[in-house]
Image 1 (cartoon, rainbow, N blue to C red):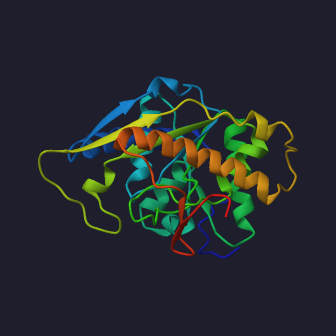
Image 2: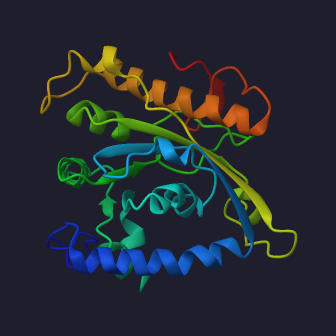
Amino acid sequence: MSKHSAWPKEIKPSKRGDAVYRAAGHLLRPLYNLPMRPEMIGMEKLPADGGFIVVANHVTEIDPITVAYPLFMRGVLPRFLAKDSLFRVPLLGWLMRQCAHIPVTRGSAQAAKSLEVAQAVLSSGGAVLIFPEGTLTKDPELWPMTGKSGAARLALATGAPVYPIAHWGDQDFLPQYGKPRFGFPRKKVSIVVGDPIDLSDLLEDRDPGTHYSHSQLTAVTNRMLDRITDLLEDIRGEKAPEGRWNSVLNVRQSPEQ
């Protein structure tokens, strides 16, 4: 393995790492609250003892902190699947490794390793946070776009409960690929936790450890994105456009296409 690899020798939550994680969280929370005013709904739906998956929409770079906020308030330390380049950033990379976040190297054999580590986190009673879109949405109106298969693979492999979280308002403070907008009044950020997504009909024929069909992965991914979109419609007070934005083709199309 390259000496520049983002992977440490072992990715595993530890008492020391959790202490660092909590300290960072307590430090970041008041800093986050300075420019933003989070309003959380449904936080009590999240289990307080881990062993679940969280899926959320991805609008801007600060989203991981926003989505982790209600989990942290519940005493749960979520582990993120994040692109491996972040683990090479000085200080940030050290912090992410200490917190046992999981690097993802797309298009490589280590992509499968990322899911194996995520499965181990869940089996040990931890929580894993995934953005099913895989990256910031390219939808012109910032609705969830077509997704990747990682979250679906993890759900099929583990059968763990999946909780949707939708949020809106981050982009008013930090536009996509833009600079922070400080000032008063603080930017309102709405964060809504939904009920667990019912995947029972899609999970009943699952065979952990096997390869899943494209149709299985697509069905699970679409149901996740549908629930996130439903919650986001309530927050935004408007209906999402028909279909989802395909970032490869740069068109909006139905999920079945």
